[in-house]
Image 1: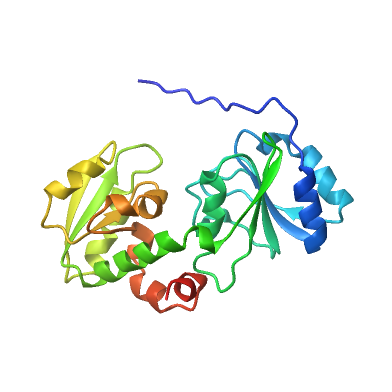
Image 2: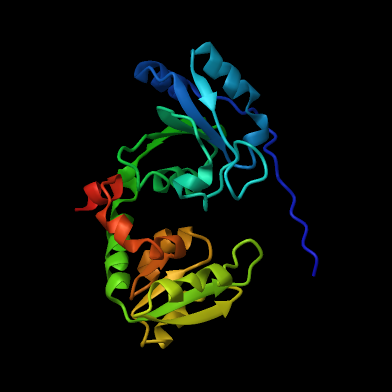
Length: 249
């Protein structure tokens, strides 16, 4: 079956609300990283003009999983996937909801310093701030899953066949890196969380689908879950000086 995806662009005015303008002025930020969800990314001219009037320089990038510059997806939650090679003081996200901007929080978990995320909602005309405190509980559970993977003998690897998410071949690197573990591969179109407990011989799970599953859905995995790229560098992550380790120890 052929599938056609159409972008639904917001038809209203996209601009910084007074609260956001006041906050940027008070904090004295001069260089920000600017991102938006697909509904708003093509209508940022007014926002950029407002920033210029405030003396704020905006920079952006094209994250790995997007097709236009400045667009942010919720699964771009690792810093290297943002492809942002310039130093900034703060992130400014234009859009509604929490799912997308939380990716910018997750993207900084392995850094030494957390930059705050200013969320400007052009629909409800309000500002919300986000930071490491928004994901501390999840990161604590995630660290526990990392430790569990380190000592696990039986590992379940979740593979989706969805286009753009399927990572079966990269997952095979686990067998080459961890010769002391046994890996079982579970392949399906959709991950059925309620079916995982039928495989009670699994010590911990490795997620290879959307990386947000490894974080946002921690409570659905009784035996814990980590993402594939973290599974391939567990020792480095646990031993690194980072916001991730400082905040949850």
